[in-house]
Image (tube, rainbow over all chains, first blue to last red; front, side):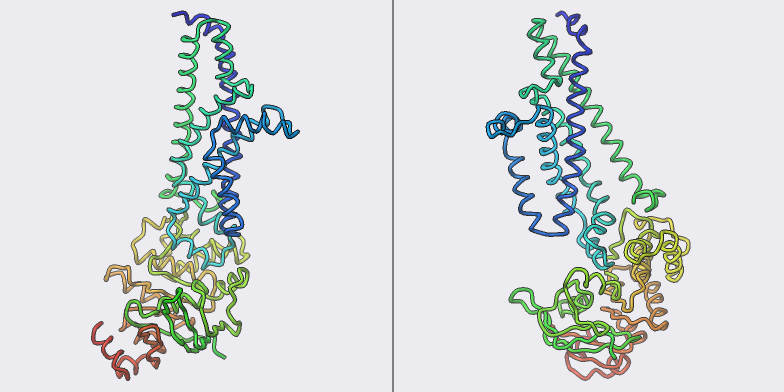
Length: 226
Length: 242
């Protein structure tokens, strides 16, 4: 066992981990925003949005992450569509987040009693008002546990981005493992870093969840949420 | 001129017809009670009046305007015709005052403070002045139903529809909701209510419409219709519910 070499290069690994997290958080935030827009679009325009968006969701959810990365980075280049690795990476993370979040939000919405939607309709709300004031918060509340799990999966999946030369944690780790001849020690440390990150984000989501649902029984006013 | 005019209205779900040839005019200020067995079509007919259900045939005019299911027109209709449901359907994530203030604020072009004032006024009217900041889940069924009535009134509708609003309540809570409805009737609000409270219908309504197998089977002045039903079906229904 010789962890000294690995610990000497810890800043390198931490830097890689932070870049991976950056892709995950950035892509996930944009992805959730896209998913919310897709749900809103489905409410406002029905199948004209539902059918194309569902095709997108199925394609992304039923092809491997790694294949998507290769397709975007190497495959499209053959057609003359070149993009830097970081652009391909953010697109892939965003697409995956959007596709899975759309399904998660949809199931969160299925849990909203039909009567609440009828109440909103009967008050003369537009689709946007209905989404914003009636659907959004109960939907998010129902979806948060699943979103939390999905974020962790996506964050761990960023390790696959090393295959298109994104210098994230797994990429740095592979380099270090081959230059230091200490793969065991390197990958133990890397595993610890991933575990730490996952726990931190799981805790963060738990905090958000408590904030969103805790407010339902306490003093909280519409002014705070709109 | 009548405020609501149904002319030979029919409603089917696929091949299953639930309303046959409903013709009825309701004048402004009138209170009409729809009574009848479960499945007789009374809730469906009520829900046609604010476009929650689309009519399959015949014509329906509200305040002289033929009903249209185009989105913007439907929204305009619903600002004239409010509805209160059996299950209250309050927004669980909003306080009582925000439940009531939401529609005026979002659709009625009232500012935040105006909408809140309006909400307080209607909540006082239904006897809930001490519950402004409560959440729906902290209220009893009767209180929740009164919030729902205040929420509907805050839209300042010309017509209030009530769909079995006391059916989900414990017997001891029914009275508080009926009191509010009785007051609204006295104040001259046009109301159409689906109800099983025959005694209340007899007292508060101007007219009773008895539905039987999807048809408006017997329609007449409340008192006379209950005390001297003309058709055998209504007689049978009344003796069953008494």
